[in-house]
Image: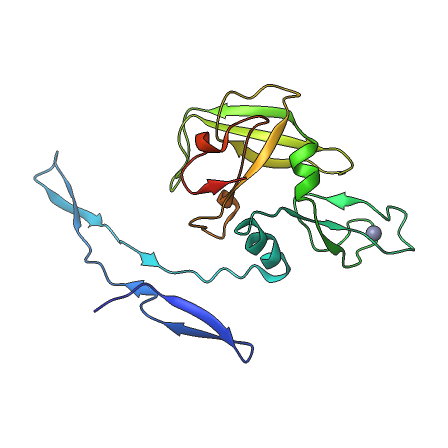
Length: 196
Ligand SMILES: [Zn+2]
């Protein structure tokens, strides 16, 4: 009996269990205009990829707990000391030193606005967001970068105050666990699985 591949780490090694690939039969591709002669075959491929988050793991773990983490350069010799980065990045782009992790949830709840946005009526393969997707670029007071995310309720406007919401009830441990709604949205209006 097959089961989805599952992984954990012990003694600094991946420990794997279950099926990481499935054999699916090929089917012929035939030419309807030429006596259904054989042209080729389909090659179905399904596999489980092990995606390591490395130093960013705490960012995704925190989303599942309703917290937005950022990084900050605390190197006293760095010209940009004190710079805060969201999206989360491990190393300072100026001094290349390892940055400190900080919780910026409060800042995001109080001082986040839409810098610009893009509404997409169509999307690529494997997309699971509802369409149209309202991609927003979020500006935070005191943060030197802008975060790309998506608005779950309402229509975006430049300068609109937004607040983060987190998929804490059934987290995916991906960036989709973070979304945004206009400030003032009621908890009862949030998408299923999301909390403030
Ligand atoms: Zn630095």
